[in-house]
Image (cartoon, rainbow over all chains, first blue to last red; front, side, top):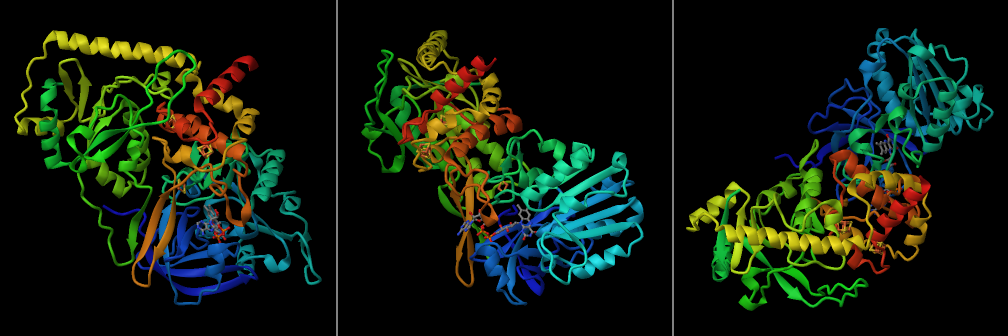
Length: 271
Length: 361
Ligand SMILES: Cc1cc2nc3c(=O)[nH]c(=O)nc-3n(C[C@H](O)[C@H](O)[C@H](O)COP(=O)(O)OP(=O)(O)OC[C@H]3O[C@@H](n4cnc5c(N)ncnc54)[C@H](O)[C@@H]3O)c2cc1C
Ligand code: SF4
Ligand code: SF4
Ligand code: FES
């Protein structure tokens, strides 16, 4: 019987410095890990620990997985001092990803905050593999400062797609910044979409998800058309350890992506 | 199901042959705290723990009239153990067959919760599965109960009717043994036990004994005015903002005892150890009463107060599990009540929530 706690080896092939405290790790797992965009993996270091991360790479690429990781604590500090060639641990994928079939034929609004753009990059790759399947793809992305913006090259490339409409913003600008200033909700206006046939996908820190959701409701998005990535403390990723409960759900088993409708009546969902 | 009669003298024969096939555990009496009960019940204070038969003297054994101290789950997942060795090594799971005598119906109920967690869903826990398959459960009817027992409040009877391999009902002349599984039947037949027709007076005695204990227990828990199981989910949710959580948690010292001793609690934490060549993942029982249980990266913590954590324990038991499995994750064994140094009493909390919900209506 397969031991679900057993990780496999993954070689860190490349490390890309995205921002002063965010790096993308390009991994080559010993066995293929096929994931659906939005699912997550448990990634870590042997003898140190592991944590949940959502791949930021194209789900159609099988032999490599990329994780974009912010330095925030015990494990991620250790990950950030690693060098190329290190062997790391990987298990998964876990949870339920984005239901791409439900998005077909619709306007897609993608709202990201900070490192929350990581799973959304994977989603954008998946959408742009078949851009004709969707109407407008509207991307709104906010970071703290211009330095904190992720994936600057990709953002340029995405903007060149005919049906992509992309706007970024920063909370605090510097002299070089010509774009929007303000939190991400300030660029959620005049959206080129038909609310009746649109979905919104949000990923970012809890406070950003909360205010974005409120804003989307104000714009008359229905609770079932808003998809949120919920974060909770996780240990097993397998629906066993009990750490990630919200209401009747385990985030690792039933999420991490939820429709707002599924969780809106649960008290204190924003943490 | 088939029944057979066991004269008292044959009990140790039975233990001997079970012990040939399994590592048998038997209940042993230890003196417990004197229990004071305010409603004129003369309730026993002795406790029972499970010990290996092979290490016991004959006279150490005593038919336990109620549940043992340790929850049954402790035989299926250990408090701290290696669940995986990597990269090159495969985990070797010891193939130890265990039989336990003296399991009660509250423990059998809790097994449904543990089975659901560790056997169902997308992933099966290999250690739990192996131990579960290797477990031979010899349950028995309760002959009395502790002050903290309240199984009946959830309609869990003080005598088992399913979920065991064998069940022993203690009668005046000996034991009426009910066979609950094919493996138990095969074992008995192998050892030459015969299934004869049970004289009807024994069946009558069984029924009256069961009725008797049920009546007494019903009388005992009446004084706690516990809500019916059908309203548990509702009162927990209605009481979400109750002041009760704050009041009750005031004395909690966050020892985690209520979770660890609980028959149904299952939460755990994975951690790592190991050297350059072999690494190990360690699974330890965890407690949702610990401050860091839900702490997220960067410090956010949805369960940052003791009151929220106490409420979490109840939401998990009476909201999550009722939604996910249709059963409350509490069997009324009362172990948490006995364990808690702060004297936090689940019965009192359920009763208060129920009263609050009635007065809100
Ligand atoms: C589904 C999901 C997807 C995610 N995707 C991403 C992503 O794509 N990119 C990203 O950057 N982040 C992502 N995260 C967040 C990421 O998991 C955290 O940043 C990571 O867990 C931080 O680990 P840390 O040890 O560095 O942080 P810490 O804050 O040190 O610890 C995080 C947790 O580990 C516990 N902990 C700390 N020390 C120990 C110890 N010694 N032993 C045991 N436990 C300890 C803490 O109590 C806390 O619960 C995701 C989270 C989830 C739930
Ligand atoms: S909550 Fe208390 S009474 Fe209920 S099963 Fe757990 S230990 Fe027993
Ligand atoms: S046993 Fe009592 S004191 Fe210990 S964690 Fe539980 S409620 Fe708190
Ligand atoms: S992380 Fe263990 S149950 Fe979800």
